[in-house]
Amino acid sequence: MASVDIASFIRRTALAVAHRADLGHPGGDLSCADILAVLFAEKLRYDSEDPSWPGRDRFILSKGHAAIAYYAALAAVGLLDPSELDSFGAFQSQLSGHPAVTKLPLVEASTGPLGHGLCVGGGIALAASLGSTRFDCYVLAGDGELQEGSNWEALMFAAHRRLDNLVLIVDRNRLQHGGHTEDICSLGDLRAKLESFGWLVSEIDGHDHLQLRSALSRDDQRGRPYCILANTVKGKGVSFMEGRADWHHRIPNSSELSLAIAEIEAAQDV
Image (cartoon, rainbow, N blue to C red; front, side, top):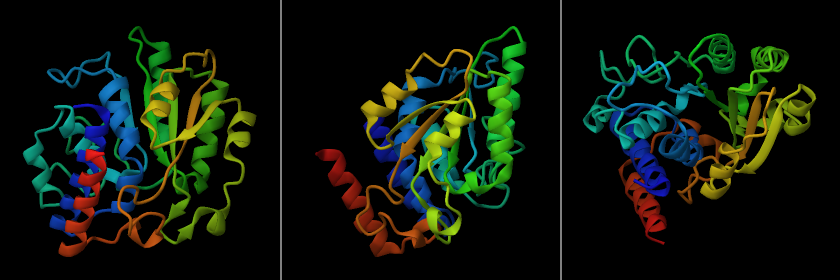
């Protein structure tokens, strides 16, 4: 599938699975759908026949509450049986509410407590830089979780160790559970802060696949970790969810689901 088709699949799947399980975080699933689609369709190196291939790129979903979007992306590219999606959130399912390394072998690190993914990713990238097998490590974080102090220790560490095989993608939708990020604890000029820490930074529209493709192909990060600030819209693709904090973890009812799916399918046909 092309990346735009994968993004549509992720959006439709995220809403349908959350509705069925009465569990999930639809707003954040929709904001990162395009990022996951381009990343998994075009950038990450992996072997669908051998998911544990040592040379694979590592991916960590630090914003673990977007687990359904992650599982949908894996299913779209053949790394997960799509029928498994029906088990999301069920007792003993390998698809838990947050990615768990003890349940799903494809998960590189368990996430859920926010602010941990970049710390783990820095360690993985350092190990890769010291070993004989070269690979890159990609971390997808929410902007709200950058309010956690552990991230800033990891940012310093990565720059100090010159980890140019580490890529942080920030889903900058400017909303979190309680409201706007800038009202709750302002992140300010993120680009300036990251650059002051020694990171190479690109700032893009996180729903534009051309811009995502270009940013992920940038190759001038020699000796520096790299961050893509992806400006997104929470609930992207569904008119009554876009830009609303209450859809952080509100679950659509049957009529809302039908309307949302229709809007997503209509956009795909344009």
